[in-house]
Length: 497
Image (cartoon, rainbow, N blue to C red):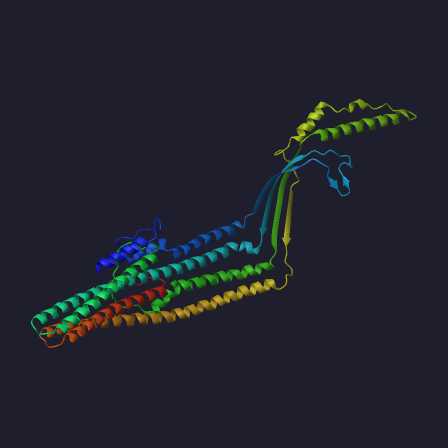
């Protein structure tokens, strides 16, 4: 049987999936250490812990909403050469033919600030919601503590059941040797020996099943811890059968302040109360301020077009000057003529046009800045705003009723759970007495069997009574610890030293 148990363990180890750098379980595992390992590795609990990080960022984001928004942008583009049309006309019709290609670049910087009542209350709302998230994490932690404690106790229980099964196997083997000795002296028949051998076989099956249950409970405990299931360890925390001296009034007072589910409902109700004010903010005015700074740059692929325009302007000026001189000469008192030679397109002007064209991509020309202020006053938007206010108020009222319902249920559950603990304790005490009596009866039955006063069947019956008493005592003791674990889950704190 030991070989079979070892083979089972090796099989489990062979199919265990490596989980990376998970925390290793110590060779002697206490309940406190198991809880710490579970808090660091249990996947379900770690997911709830991650929600706290997101809630912290929600608070930071709410504060960030009180600050102005700044957006910057820049871009570049290219426009090919050709005629552009404006309605039914083209640039050629307007005297601007042979347009070259252009390179464009631009930038803009915009600053905006929006302020409303909901924005001002945003940090308070985010903090209240963060408290709800933290309370939900404590609920997850309380569930984890309850599950790990239950698995830890179950491993103890399965170990005790295995110990009893091995003890019964030893008793059966002793009875077999006793029957064989009685057969040798002629006090019993071979039937008694056969019955003893059958009893040994049955107890071997019980041991095998108990070993499998122990392995199963060990792997379930490791699963709750969130670590690989191929690790071996011994339990070091003992669970004593201590009288339940707690009072229901004291437990109720503590539970009303520390029960994780009740605390979560209270935090949700506080958040819902703030949500009412946020819903009312739809009736309040809001303020918006915005300003922008921008610029652009443009560069032509060729300056011939700009030079031609400049030369055309010079030619036009010369023609106008000549026309003016002609007019002056026709007057009754002619005026002195203007100097038309001063209108000349020089190489300096040509170079200036070329230099002015070299703007792409960062020689920006600033556009006029702008700033605006807007105050928005909601006047009538249907009944949607009032519907949102009523929905927030009803949600708050529902949470108030849920909180009251949980308080009443918690008081009843605590009273019932404490009564169950006391009943389980008394039952364990009585089962301990029954076990002592059954052990005495088995000892007397063996003595009488050796004297030939009873049959082997009666001896087996006495051993069966003791085995049942042993099992009943073990289950009663651990039933007590199960009820204490349930009471701790309601309380939200540990009651064990």
